[in-house]
Length: 149
Image (cartoon, rainbow, N blue to C red; front, side, top):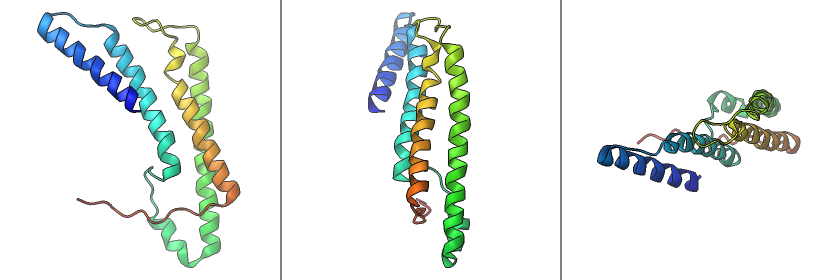
């Protein structure tokens, strides 16, 4: 993620300096930045899942602490929903990958299948982690507190 961000920042900075300072720019800067941004977001999403860093609405589920059986069922239901969302994302991303195999970006010439590829990989990794948590019956982390500054 840091490499993507660093290359993006450098690319955009150089492009801005060239455009405003010299009246020309690097055409590949925008395509490269878009591609790296997409990859960075999905790498971050996959890295955030096992750490429990995704947005979580645990207040309703936390009310089930007094009912352990219901809490286990709610946890399983949430994980099944995550798996379903990952399956839908993977299916849609795969369709876009197949379409993008025969087309290439205008400036850099990379296969446009590289744009939906991180969504596909992210959905596979988060789906695998959610399935593992479902099989292991990992309890939900209800310790999220509102961070107000």
